[in-house]
Length: 446
Image 1: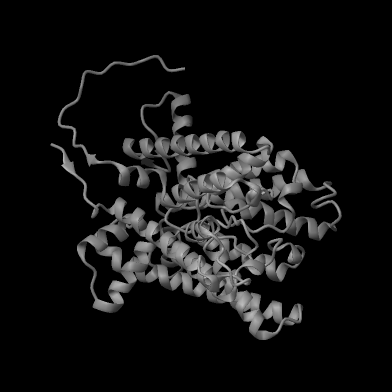
Image 2: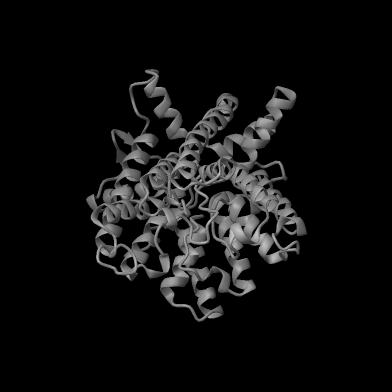
């Protein structure tokens, strides 16, 4: 029996929530007061920036510090925080604060967005999301503020502003910076690089994993869940691959790591190996990276970070599950087993679906941008992957892409933030419940 899925469907509400945030952000950034010049930024610029902020991407078509006024920068910061926490999470928090209760529909939507397993856990999860975000952002802001004020003779008021801005941007994996060259002025400063890396890694692991780490530290559980084990192991492995790969490839590049001392090379290589986890900050000119580094960064950006966090990409669990499926098929085993657990068939289908939809979206966008512009495949593919994975790294071509191409990137960023399956479910006219199965036939594969 078919049934219509109304606007109250959790997937639709998540998409609508992010859409409304983008519209509100666009309207605010289009105001003359939002720019330093006092003139409207224009619809496309305002829309691109608002989408990039809400989707915690970091791609920009104008310099954040010089183009936007303090009002505009605060709007961008608010959109980053809203997008990182999740629109439905914020709505749930507002409901708890105002009415001390959450309606069933709101609980279902927050459950879908935060990947909460049990409906009864939603209230506690929403509160813990806010608490973790506040603590990590505060600690990062304190360290950055102190460093900016004492190490760079920055007035304390300005130091606090920049410390808070970059702390929120880092934890939410947004990549917005108040410098035209991102964090390159601090490329060899560990007091700036390390706090930013720790914040973006914490946000990128995903809230479910952070909750589990907290429970283990308090002695409330002794056994890791399968999700946490897969996320932590895969995330760590990809960080090692990124850090070692970028450092080795760029070690002698005169335009990136070449002129630096050994300590500087190791620090910059570590930062550039970690930031593709969808953070978007950079401490070297991305446009000067070797083709091998760009391709490796494409790979890392596409995978992204942990589920139900501030990171984008197809997520490390999706990548790991696909690897397990391939390993199982090569061995000729009938079912996928990981760490003493059997992976359900529907989870395997979801992983395959997410990966293929992502590949299709990036390939289509790359081809379209190649037809629109004269940029090389390296640069265009990098831009498309960065937009879809909500990373924000760029070889420097974003502002030179024609408006139609920028609107295409807006769509990619939105798709990457809400997720291919969520968006597909939201656009579906109806849900189907199959009450019978057709005869089985096996086509030839491979």
